Length: 125
Image 1 (cartoon, helix red, strand yellow):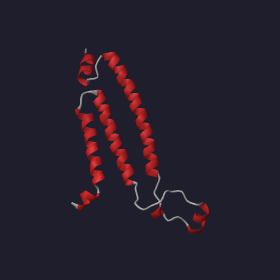
Image 2 (cartoon, helix red, strand yellow):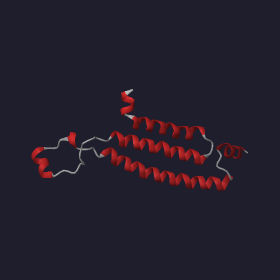
Image 3 (cartoon, one colour):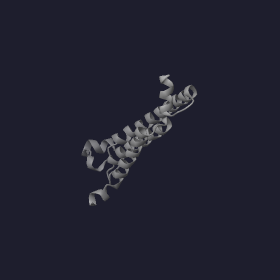
Image 4 (cartoon, rainbow, N blue to C red):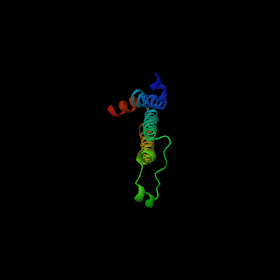
């Protein structure tokens, strides 16, 4: 039980992932599917950022002369890679959302609905 309480943020991210996954799989409206995808993506980004945190450590900006003399103590410096990768994921996610919204707008103009079942019916005719 202590482990669950200590890592409560990870449990919150898992719940967010499942909400997003349910929205992508269970809903028939394409806008709701897109919102579910964004919720799922946000949970993944938060999970990776949370995993990259080191309590009591410093930012990875070091003096090159000090590093040449003493070296770098990696236990006291945060690894910037997870944060940089998630920043890239945020930018890609925004671009994907924009393109998806443009496609949804085109689908709505063509078929008059964003309900998956109705679109599939119109495609079958």
